[in-house]
Structures are given as C-alpha cells and as structure tokens.
Length: 337
Ligand code: UT7
Figure (cartoon, rainbow, N blue to C red):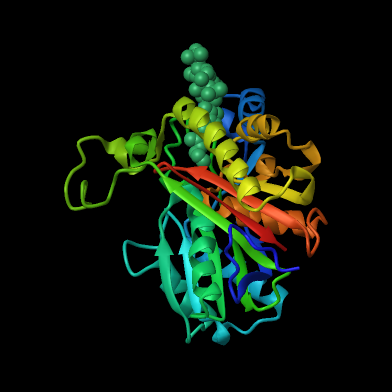
C-alpha cells in the first residue's frame, strides 16, 4: 500500500538501500576518565548511561571515519561508488574549514559523478541530511544519495572539564538512499526545527569569523565544546516528545504500528524520560549509548546500523529517527524500512 502522508503522495520514495557504521578502535572507559577528572564510573553511568566511548588517534580524521562508514553502507547495498549522485556529510567537526569533508569522502570513494557538501546542524545533522536528500529523490532530481554522519568530537573536548568530557565519543554512520516508485518503502515523513535563541547552551566558538584563528582568543577555552547540561536536558525531553507526537499524528500511526524508535543517543535518562511520556515500550527504544557516548550527527546512523544488525528492525517495519542538539536544532524521520 502506498501510504499517503498529509496528502503528500510523491511519485518516488527515498528508500534505505544500505547502511554501515565505523568507530575508532581506541576506547576510553569511565574508570580511565576518573583518573583524569574528579568523577567516577558510578556517577557517569547513573547520570548518562555511558560506560565507554571510542576515541580517534591523531591520524584518524572525520573524513577517514566517514569514508569507512560509507564503504560499509555501499558494500551492504552492493552499490558502486561511481554511481553515487549526491553525498551529504553531516558534521560539526569537519576535516578542515574548507573544502568540505564531503569532498574528501568523494575523493576517497572515487565517487566521480556525485555533487557533495557538508551540513552543520550538530546532533540533528543526519536527520536534516536525510530530509534534504529525500526532497531530491522524491522530485526525481537524483536517483540515489549517500548520507553520512561523522564526528571527531574528542578533538574539541576539554579533558579538564568533567561536566562535558564524560559525554562525547567519535564515530560515523552512513545510509545509501535509492529512489523507488514502489510506494511500500521509504522515508514517509520528515520534520526539522531550530531555535537559535539557545545558541549559548551548547557551542564551540573558535575558530569561526567571530573568533578567527589568526587572532588571540580572549578565553582559551573557546577552542572546546561548552555545554549547559541542565538547560539542554530539559529542552531535549520536551522537544523529543513533541517531535515524535507530531510524526505519529502526521502519519496517522499508533505506537503499536512503529517497529523501533532510534533516538539520538545524548543521555539514556533523556531518552527514557521522553519514552515514558510517550508511553513507548522499552523493547521499541534502542539504546547503545553505553558503548559509544554521544557521537552527535553519527549517533542515529550508528544506532540504526547496530539495531538492524542485531535483528531489532526488519525490512517493511516502521522506524522513527528522532534527534535534538546544539543550535538548538531538532527533527525526525519516519521510515518504512
Ligand atoms: O546532544 C545534546 C548534547 N547533550 C547535552 O548537552 C547533555 C545534556 N545534559 C545532560 O546529559 C546532563 O545534564 C549531564 C549529564 C550533563 C549532567 O547531569 P545532571 O543530572 O543534569 O547533573 P547536574 O549538571 O545537575 O550536576 C549535578 C552535580 C553537580 O554538583 P552539585 O552542584 O550538585 O554539588 C555537578 O557539579 O553533579 C556534579 N557533576 C559531576 N560529578 C561527578 C557534574 N559533572 C560531574 C561528573 N562527575 N562528571
């Protein structure tokens, strides 16, 4: 059945043809962190759900992680890189100021036909990327697109700040979207939102045009991520609940009809609190933050890839991706997988 969404019934749908993820081999446990700052495994696990995170070495860059995740997604779909038409890399820790990280990924993959760009929407970047690619596939402009979320957040982490350094990890996840005229599969609905009034809640201020690299910083900490955890926490629960509710209403879906909810892995307590308000059963809420921490734009595609591989989502089932992050930004995709 071709499921009409809010009278939106496009001739094509953007179908997930392949998915893959990659994290660096090196890990940092809560016990390791407790030797660096005044914290403990008990505090971190109880307040965030995180036990360990993967961290890059100096040689492992964002484009490297992104390329490895992309290669796995392409292999899974048995798809040649030289057929890719569009590559979007969602990241807030790019390879360099310019050119885009996506250009490095294109080069590494040999995706000569593709046009490529980066997307900076922090933790919401991957869902924003899927939503944008969805438009190009639905309107017939592209036959396929590769969407990657890739981050090396530990390179902008202040390892002396216990309120932030315990939260983040590195990694990448990718999906290959292909255009299909079979209405039974694909992205059914996407929603995106932002509120720049809260930019101070979560940011990294150097080295953009406000604080260029060539000028001495008034505060050397501006090279690191800074967060107001409590403020973000409250907003996150509220926005995740609102966004999932909007998705269910727009798609005329009951919770019973949804196979799995893949939330941005920002804090297990935030996800559990939102899930409780939405009355989601535990078995439909995928959690893997314990092993990765918060990997920003890479979080949802890593979780999705892992969940599918563990048999948590089957072809034909409905999955909802929901994200929230710096900006503030938030959004969701409803997908018939
Ligand atoms: O993807 C979006 C990005 N994610 C975020 O921005 C994170 C959202 N926020 C959170 O996940 C939570 O707010 C945190 C995990 C960051 C903090 O948890 P919390 O329950 O909100 O704790 P809190 O900030 O209210 O701090 C409670 C206490 C404080 O001590 P006092 O003032 O009560 O004496 C903190 O100083 O815990 C202390 N604290 C720590 N103690 C041990 C803060 N960080 C640590 C730490 N280890 N790492």
